[in-house]
Amino acid sequence: MRSGTSASWRAASLVLCLMAQACVGAVSNQSPKAASSSPVVSVTTLRVSGGRVDWSAARNLIAYDRVGADGYYDIYIMDPDGGNDRCLTCGTQEHAPQKHNGNPVWHPSGGYVVFQAEKDHHPGASQEALPGFGRHSDLWLASADGRRFYQLTKGPATTRHGVLHPHFSHDGRLLTWSEMYAPPNPFVKRKLYGFWKLKVADFVMGPQGPKLSNIREYQPGGPAFYENHGLSMDRGKLLFTSNLHASGLQLIENDIYVMNLDDGKVVQLAADGYNEHAHFSPNGKKIVWMTNAGNPNRGTDLWLMNTDGSDKMRLTNFASPDDAGYTGGRMIAADSAWSPDGTRIAAYVQTSLLKQTGMIVLIILDPAIAKLTGPGPALH
Image (cartoon, rainbow, N blue to C red; front, side):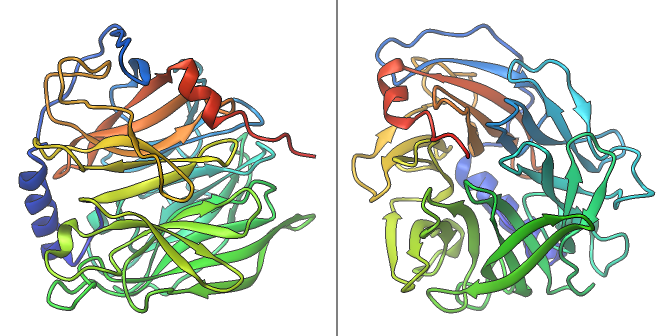
């Protein structure tokens, strides 16, 4: 969920926490549990403390964000089994901001990582710049070895600016993200999380560093909250979350949409309950997303659907003792990333909405399901 003013983000988090009944303590690592009747074979814990994730097809590495002892998030890189863990943004104060750094995304080449970085100085609370909130932040790019850092965007240091969820196109030529331009106001329709725009820019890495050009902005349903989830394989469609159809209880009226970039046509893909964090599968034929649909316990789980919204299928049921990922507590499935071959999903599962903390789990799909999701086409 997203932030409001210092007071409103706390109120929103509290209401959501009560709604989801998901304020649970830390969850211990456990052995995989088979679930033969489920599309998920096993769920194991990669990190007991972790956040938003992205999986590099070129290097088979996972980038993720994690809060440190100083209370700020940083970007880390690890192997798919959790080994060789290292911090990308720690101790780089001479090259990049050292407050909240999060929401990493790999360039398809595997040579660079783009992430959100909180400004060194800004009005308002640093809590509002948590990676899931994105206020007071800009987009930065780091080389995968952590030796070079570049600032990609530079928004005003005001209470009305922020960025969220950058994503590269499959060929790396486009970068998409969400950008806030008006601060939250819970008393204005669709403005609980502020007003945001979807942005698409050409991306070029030249001798002098990266460059964004030809930046386009989209608000397909007028002023609302728009959270970017990236482009289709052919770069013709943009996947996103929005409350553009919100009418009453704004907190739980987020839906999944896809927009044609050529004519602006929007199709609603998932509208039952609360929906967010959608991602195209490696082959571009499926979409995984999180929703609380069908959850009497009000936690959230990962589901799978076709790119036109048909054939919706539940993947996880974290609150059920029969589920491979059962932990004994109600969980909030959030961001996720596909393995390059479509057989696995690395997922950020929140254990506390109030504290914005959680763990990273590795979900292994049934082979029959994996055949429908990957692998993706090779880059040339």
